Image 1 (cartoon, rainbow, N blue to C red):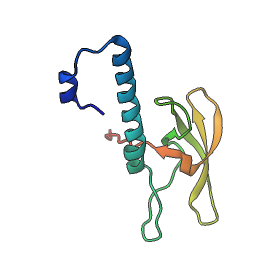
Image 2 (image 1 turned 135 degrees about the vertical axis):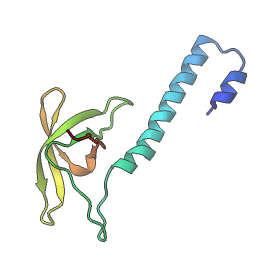
Image 3 (image 1 turned 180 degrees about the vertical axis):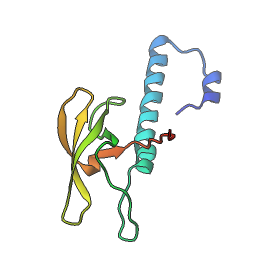
Length: 117
């Protein structure tokens, strides 16, 4: 994958080759974002650590096998904890207004912070 410094030294490329390079860069960014960033914001419960689980009102990304940049955002409406009191499933409202049920492992809570009034 070319770096910004090597792009300056590349010979002049045709439009088709430039388009392919831009597409490769976009795909590379998306794959790294999905593999590296999402794992840092998605909480995982361990036996020795208690973490907050999904709650109504949380804003989440719905992890889906769709093309880059098309994952939907949704708002958690209702949660369904398992016998161990950990949320396993949640109903979420999408931007289109549909309410869908998704497993908690397919929902990635977005880290939002609000400065109080």
